[in-house]
Image 1 (tube, rainbow, N blue to C red):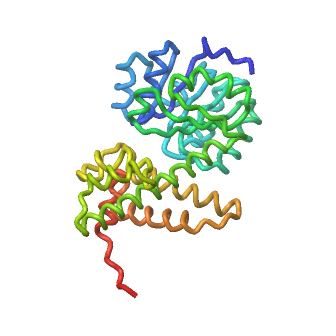
Image 2: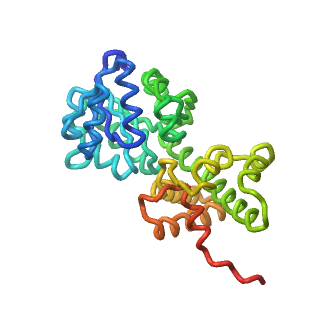
Image 3: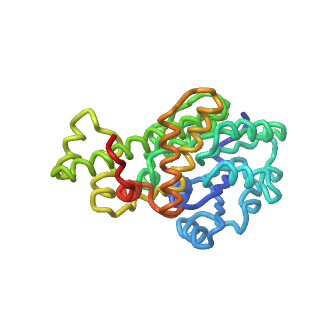
Length: 301
């Protein structure tokens, strides 16, 4: 891999809640970064951090040796790279694309082959940790793809995260991210149900959370979501219901693709899809508690 990362021009596509702090950290570290987002406000916010804001993805990719995508899903990533206005045609052979979005792993494999035909290397490197850890540079990053390319971009990834895992071949990072979010959503669903049952019986939700966090029921939801977002009903974690439901569909589709029976995955994916349809795409994912609260009580058998 001939790319010299220290002097490489970087295009960063997607300056939303996660992408903006991530791209800004790269600017602060001294890289030359040109960012693009369809939102003029997002572009202005990035420019205010010292980055260069482009008026299109293609403009951002001009003379870039490295492209980072932080977009809503694989379909959007594919359009940004290989669609009619895609940037792949502007990249020289040897360029690297790092897809840090939460994309479907099977689609990632297909896209990697298309880009390889043009001499472009694709890595999938989705993240976990939310907006706070994007700001702090303490994300968990799951990297799939060519080992040499992964080593080449590692200094950049180390600016964004403190737990970096090479998960295997292309698509494996996206598979791991979807499966992680499945486990996360299952834990949040169970924790919300437990609090509602306990509160009705007379237990204090704050006390329940404290007990869960020193007991075997402890999970990410009990640790960081119940007290700030669920118990006070603020539902402001910064990660939407739409994104979580999408990741759950990805995990369930992966199980089907691999021929693995996963009944709980199917149940959780369906439940969150119904919650999404009722609460809307902009609802915070912790609002699953509100959806559960409005479900009818089933008749006892």
